[in-house]
Figure 1 (cartoon, rainbow, N blue to C red):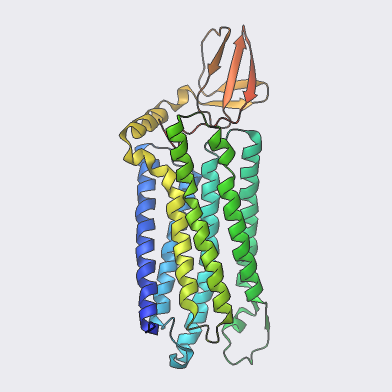
Figure 2: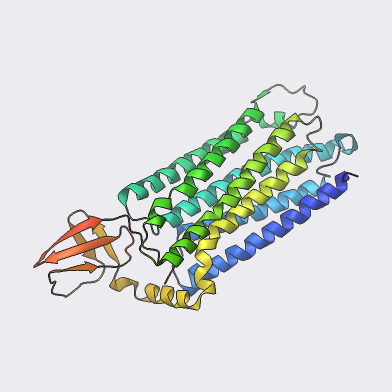
Length: 343
């Protein structure tokens, strides 16, 4: 026997509550780790907090949908129920695009912590700019899908105006999100393979970043639910699955995107190393520029004919080969992971 409309609605609310709660705990732990324990919070951490707030907003929208009998047959809904469900659907669409974009840009900002080569960093920056532009386009199109927007919830079909083909738009954005998911997963692979860490830690780091594939899988499943939803004769009744997998996708991405930042919290040795790196950061933070190295602190040292590894630097991993008073700078694809996977 199949589930009743009420059972499917309850399943949506429970699943949303569970996944949102897990993601919330993960983001809280990440924030404690990054902002309080090791005191190295950055844009990636802040953007993930924004994504979590949007996820909570999504949960509240689901609760509004529940109050208006989301997932129930159209024949059982009042006019007010249908109007409210259409309006909350518009809010859900905007929330979804904002949350997904925040998560992806957060992950890309995290990559900038350890990507060393200019090429890799330019690719990361380019992808960030691209996603910001894509987000603006998605929000603009979604918010103006009907002209006037009230045409969207015109149940009579009598109001003057027109709406775009949202089915084609949602297919495009969902498919494009899957492609960019794969690109973001692949972007740091070369750097992770060449990273100067013990093999065990290198494998662990690749695995941690690889868990993002779970979020991509949920995106693919969500695309299928969109296809099913667009073919439904009763979109009110068939809206459960697309919302269910949208919620799972957003919160899974938050969890996977936060996983690398949690290692110091569960590894005392890593936490100690990260905190020492934070408190002593000024002694080794060098900013690479063409032709010279500028330190944030004055350095009084006589260089010898030796290769001096400056350790992790914020802009590139740099090696100085000094002879007398002259030095040369060489960019390498060996990335610093002190912020992601401390020793």
